[in-house]
Image (cartoon, one colour):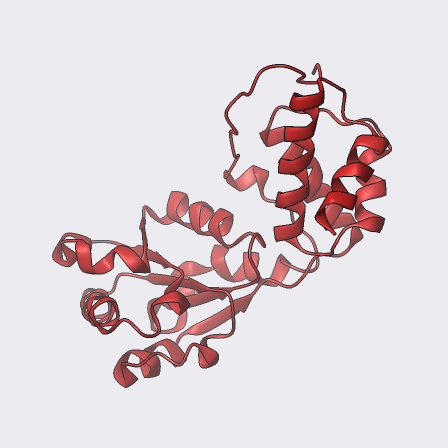
Length: 223
């Protein structure tokens, strides 16, 4: 694949099951998502830092279960009853900890799915017992769910994530770029997203291939 030097092509993020990069940091969470038919009480909370793979795993589960995906912040604007007839994934539940309308909508959705025997997947950044939802009945139901955590990446996973992020942008860095980034960048998935975006922008602006020098300059600009 040729290096992109002059065309700002859209990012095409691959979210299929075969595109999920399995490593010790996420293998347990993946196995729990794959075993969704056996979730206690038909519900699971999936947590992890930004960019850790929560959205990817949510889409993997939705493809397998036929679930619909909705952001927790959109629940009060949604016809909740339209979600009652099948599996549902609600993303970023920890972000509605102070919004009673959104929590109330999720509470009703949760109860309706439980009554119908449909599974519910909820996601957030931190452990669910730390969400401190202001609706106590909702927090107690969240606490009763199974919990799968995505951990920070090791070197091999971080390198694989960087390779995927470059591929999503249709970019081919020089062979020494990813090993250099793994040993010099902040060790998080969110940082990987930022640095790949910055390198893409710098490559386009300077009309240069993606080399170690270009990557180093982008890292220096992030400090």
